[in-house]
Image (tube, rainbow, N blue to C red; front, side):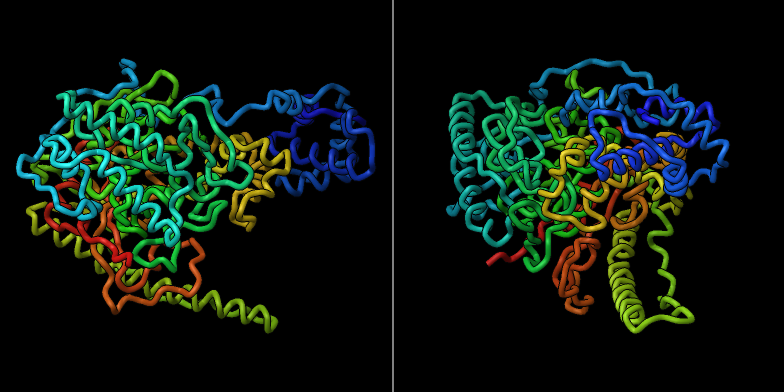
Length: 631
């Protein structure tokens, strides 16, 4: 009996089959059988009772009686499939779904007083004044690791030129890229023209603000007219767009100078891209982590003033932790994503990667606010006050993150196993034992952060993350990603991607096609509980201190809460040695002499206070001023 998906779904419903996954699985099995038999592909595929049995196993429904199977088959009619009709539209990655995600915990807090701001950022800097005592150096390279604030003071006083800074950073990018592999495209001509224009405007007294003349780099998922936007992925090396991303437009308007487009793991996963693997400047034998791989590596290596990264599930946090940079993952919707590659419409966030929390605030001030195109962008204010008394804030810490880990327990051997299985089990046990040792070692830095905060006069209140199945909500991300790259899977071009393992995008996209629509909705309902319960923590607290590698990373990316990731020292010579092979799965493998980080969390759209708290911590510790030795 021929069938199409729409009518088959209706027939299944009439037969009492409630699983949204089952019809799709069965249709796929029938279509595969049709292709294998050489049947005319223009006609709808047919099904058999055996196919229904196989589909029911994959979908986790049934089993069905012969009578039920007969009713399903007899209820099918020959019509064009709705799936095929939609696929013919060839939807580009830039088209958003017909819904908008806003992480508000309650209806009364979700009232939007929308005031669409222009592309140009505010002309007045919030909470920043140039340092009149800023001193330039005879050697421009001495400014390589200077903060945005320091560079801005020098540019404002005309003690250094934007052109000199731009040429210095371009030279450093060219010098260290063969070692660290962080550049996809240098935008040199554009940068030189922008720098010259910035110098002319500043000389004429037309100062645009603290980013005027500052060289910066973009993660290469941001569209820049006239240059490739590769998304780091094989098959997209020559892709380009005719309009700049909103963030690029706003930074252009602020007078910042775009010097380079930086690497990202293919389609925003990891640090491996079509040209190789981006490296950690503290230990070039390791990857920089990802997916904002090039942005974090270049900032940490003193090869750019600041960079823009993105995070869906750790892509700012992870490379900042590995490379020792400072990152601010903003509240979901604070920064519009127009012109950026879409991976997950309900989880993607753009944010700054810099050398200080103050720099994060200065950049975020320029790029936040709705643009009238990203329907999830929220008109929340961002009032940066670097002089806030952080001792007046209510500060908690996630107690479980700082508790002593349970003692290591080896995997119990089965009653019987082959020699090969035993070898594999012992390998897993050895890896788990070393990972446990690393967690114990790095915990001393987490505890030291709490001690430092207490010494600063801050009373810390223990709290716990709400106990919810956050991991079970991750398929929301992969389902949206599979939809964003639907054509990649259907066309077979996914084979061009660099990584093809079980945890890589090609397999994840294929697997996500079996995720039931009903379960997607149920996971979103569970996500509502997570938003409500995590938001409730901030009704009594302003800031929460957390381990950068704890469950908070998953939870807060789902709930949309902001996070500041700041360097928290360097591992000593007694640190566990790094593995010979960096699989990219763990951020804490750096070994002796590599950075660790701590994470601060805040309530939704309380990003300015979060940045101020992180700024206060960095003033007291100065870990962010530690730099790798590249030569």
